[in-house]
Amino acid sequence: MTPFVIIGLCGVGVLLLSLVLDGILDFDGLAGDWFSTAALGGFVSALGFGGAIAQGAGAPQLVATGIGAGAGLLVGWFSAWLTRLVRSGATDETPTTRDVVGWDAQVVSAIPDGGYGAITVRRGGHTFRFNAQAERALPAGTEVHVTGVLSPTAVTVAATYDVLP
View (cartoon, rainbow, N blue to C red):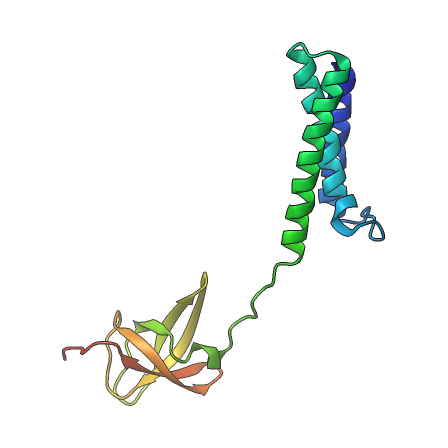
C-alpha cells in the first residue's frame, strides 16, 4: 500500500506544480490537453490513491494496480476535458457607454429638471455609474431606462413608470 500512497503524493505534487507554474511544463506538441501537467497529475494521483484504497480493501497487488489505472484514466480524462473547456471559454468584452442604451438602471442621485443626477446600471455582475439627464426631475430610487448617450460618462434616461411629483 505504501508505494501507491507515494505515487498518489507524487501526483499531488505534479498538480501543485501545474498550479504554481501555470502550464510551463505542458507538452504542447503531444495531443494538446491530454499531456498537460493537470491531466498527468490527476492521472498519477488517482492511480496512486485508487490503488491504495483498493489494496486497503483487500484486493491483491495486480487487481489494485488495475483499479488504480482505471481511476487514473477517468480522472486524467476529466482533467483534460476540464482544461480544454476552461481554455476555450470565450470572455465577453467590457461594456462601453453606448452598450448601456436600452438597459434598466436606478437613479442614485436625484436628477433635477434640466440638470444632471447619477444612475447605477447593474449587468452581468458589474456595476456602472453614469451621470444622467432626464426630460423631467426624477427622485433617487426611481427605476429608469437608458435612452441615449450624451458622452462617455453621461446618458439620457426615462422613467420606466410614472413618478408622482
